[in-house]
Length: 439
Image 1 (tube, rainbow, N blue to C red):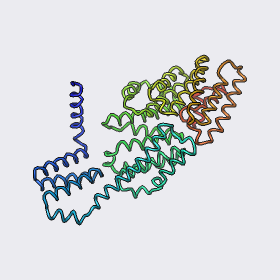
Image 2 (cartoon, one colour; image 1 turned 90 degrees about the horizontal axis):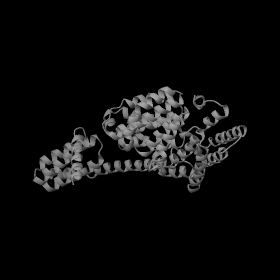
Image 3 (cartoon, rainbow, N blue to C red; image 1 turned 180 degrees about the horizontal axis):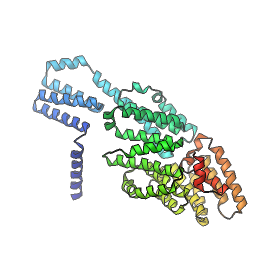
């Protein structure tokens, strides 16, 4: 009983705290005032409160509230039997109502399309893994993709338009066009400071999508510019602060990894470890898994395999990891490679068998996963050095062929296996080969 009472008090406190600068809450309060005044018979005062609410709702494009305001406007006119207002409402017709309804419908169409791609990406990873998936998505969203953003009925729909295009082009490995769409979204946000305050979450999404494209195009210095820009944001909601931290931290770790800045990376990671623990519970799972992947890769590239295994295990031991196929599959691949470097032969034999069983149970896997399995079977156990080198060369040749297929590139985004193989073949440091391949 005490817990429930305390919980209700906390929620009430949060409502009061959020009230100060929340325009939507102000509209709701004005609506409540109008309803209470109407019940008491103060029709003119009720109408004045309603007009105040309407002006604010129109400014912030709260179409659900505008529909509610229009209904209350009719209720005031009919209850008071005010002839002038009834006449005005009759002449106006239902244009305002249908206009709000159309804007809402458009927003929900975009939301539905974005949810489709986001669902596929969170479940499968970055890219679409076969032609059927691509065709299925294209058929459902083609009209929205081809729409002129300037014809959208609200600023939120226009933001959704850019967001949908960002996600679609990135999922199809068209990183330059994904970058262009993200840049348009960011420019649109920054041209309207008021809208930026209302849609900060979507602004952060666009910044994140833009950095994804820059990362895919290996434009690390430009990516670092946006990391610094994102780190300058001052935002109150804990969820948004957590997302900003994770998005910026992930990219900064990638920057240090692929530009071969080991010491700076170590210093940066040691400075953010407490924040990772602080935000872990409120980060959505794919964002947390991506952060773990980047940390695991950083430590692996610079030869700290035990720390790499620690962060890989943070993913594998997560209760929800199996819901995210590509993160889980890639973590299993990384686990085998890390244990190979640690020379844990007995453990690897068991892991390879387990991974084979996993692939049999998951028909969604592509050719690259099967190629990895075949490679792991070959290198597990005692093999003479010359034969081992030939196995690495053959596997690298196979991966280069597979990497030309846009549906088979997902694994390369999590861990650069090709550079690792090349480092083994050449007998050079992984970090050195990685730096060369990303220039």
